[in-house]
Amino acid sequence: MSRLTDEEFLVIQEFIDRSRAELDRRGFTIEIDSDLSKWVRLMRRIPGNLDIASTHDPSRSYIRPDNAFWVIIRERDQKLWARLLRRERTIVACLCYRIVETDNIAEEIRTQRLFFDRKPILDFRPVELVEPDKLPVIGGKVGLAGGFWVHPKLRGSKLTNIVARVTRMLAVRHYGIDWHVSLVRDTARRKAMIHNTYDVSHSVSITRGFYPPYGRPYDMQMSYMHRDEMMKRIRQDNLEAAEERDALPEPGGQEALAAPEEKRRLVN
Image (tube, rainbow, N blue to C red):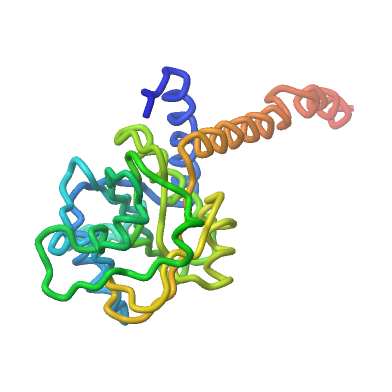
């Protein structure tokens, strides 16, 4: 992958600044951590959450600070009793990210290397790919998103969109990814969510039958997006945000000019 230009660095920073401002307006803060074992502990505390992706679990995959991180969204403010008890501010959303260097990500899936690469495993069968000849060749530095969670009270909000895009831009800037991918259940609802909520351009059916990370049958799809597409999308977002700002009335504009006349009428 070619290095980012100064202009690209500034485009990414402008987008992240706007995202942080939006989160702040909604009463949230954003953090980044390279210790994904904390994410595993969080997932195990969530009632009814049985599926912890092996792709982002340091006990099952080779996860370390130079190839993985997770983004954490917390409530900005705490009640007094929580501060007195030194409780951590409540996590309301999170997303994990891992960087895989490969000639073809589909081959990492077929051989299970994407799921269990910390040590050899005894139970191994090639994963069945859906029409492998028609899959795009996605290689180089590939960013893999996973472990996404949003608090039930905030699902359906724009929070998901913000977290997903900020995470991708951090991966582009700091890890130099060429591609972004994620693996989710192959259903119509999930496909719509990939495009509309996560703002990822493409998706394709990838596996059928037994899915090793969860130890049960799951048909999966892979969403994907090239770095050039991500940068184009962020530039467009920045442009639209600037146009919205320009359309707002300027301080001291017509409303302010009308104020002295209103005062004169009141005095007379």
